[in-house]
Length: 257
Image (cartoon, rainbow, N blue to C red):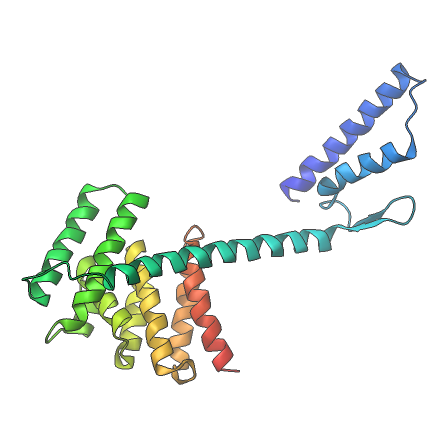
């Protein structure tokens, strides 16, 4: 029995006892039909755990299960919209930075990336998790999106397997900016096993970019299954990552008919 059912019955019983006491103390107190209807409506949210429906005088009928399902669906839609807006904002911020003026003048792409990876490592070591750190990490990622595609001889496959979080992030930035289908399987495996929440967020966006580049209909079934397995393991409080992955899987399922 759920906690709601365990609590609802005692509340209803106490309410009935309270009404009985009022009736004994104040027998002259009149309670009209409108008051009774309002009292019944007030109990509607609590009765769903006990009854499927109840019919009030005049034919008004409450379907508790349907009402609860509709409320949950509405809440989920609102949460999906909120996540979509947040996701779009983060991507727009990265796009804005990458479209800005060159911030590493006088440096080669290798020097710029090396500096960014050092900054990323120091930031994660010295600054506690929170919105401030996430914002600064996004600025670093945006710069990586700018510079990583210009790296000569960049070994994407090796970077995806690297034990260093910054090196993996540079590979995600490279594939986010320049999607290459040959790395999709390795990218999906890296994204599924990525231990850093921030890096996994952008790894999944890189997966989405590569999937769109090769065409959802050309993605192997094994890769789709790997993504589904990844979704099942994403923590419940990581709604942004789960939403990104559900969006990718939705495109893949639509392509698969």
